Amino acid sequence: MPAQELVAYIDAIYALSAEVEYKAERDKLAIPLDTSSPWFNAWKLRRPTSLDPRREAGPVDLGRYIGGYGGGFATFANAPVAWTPEDLKAGKVDVAIVGAPLDMGSGWRNAIDGPRALRMTGGAGGNDMYSMISPNAELNIVDYGDIAVDQNSTERSVDHVREVVAEIAKTGAIPIVIGGDHSLEYPNVAAAADVYGKGKVGVVHFDSHYDIGRGRVHLLDHGQPVYRVLSEGHVNAKDYIQVEGLYPGLS
Image 1 (cartoon, one colour):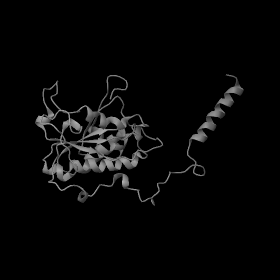
Image 2: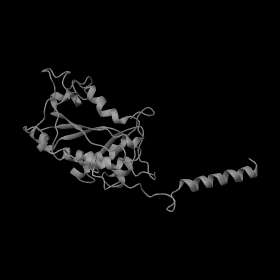
Image 3: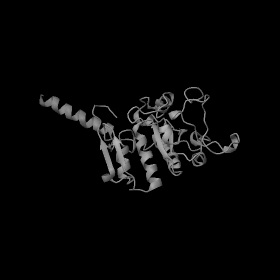
Image 4: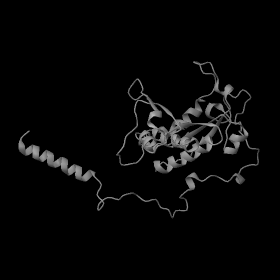
């Protein structure tokens, strides 16, 4: 291009770069939360058990019919539900499936509907056509409900997800988390490390993307959980295995 156009082009690039970068005198470092609000922690506050009907600890079957197919309330794997760690212990639960309908980490792509959709299809329940094994017959499975999320803050949400996943693991039950977007990998793996020890957890990750982004505006989103998990030492790099999808977008 002509020299004059080239100079204008380069000047435009510099000007754009100056606008994109953070400037302390112009930009807020963070948008503060209103800590004076009486509802600051209401989104994740547990209801006291004293407000519940009196019952013995343990899973509760929400089905209406003896056969267990249809009727009542939709649950993961058509399984009974559990509310507390005491329920998991009393019921000697092997697997607790819990929903985490987080969407903010992926920019609202409808990942919020994941738990609802799998409950409606009876996901993970019944006879598997490939192995001819019924998980319900071999394992004591429960639906542990959904974890509360703050759809305006991925950071606040993943902290609470990490608490609840660890809560399940500490009872001896295996947590299966139904998301939600990929940022959930961070609190899920970190929770396992909290219970079993940093560097003592391995990961096999099936995804068409490595999700090891860094240097972004937000510390965590759906493209960065692997970087956070490794850089914070929850998993040793040699214990992290990536299995790529065969097709673009396959996860």
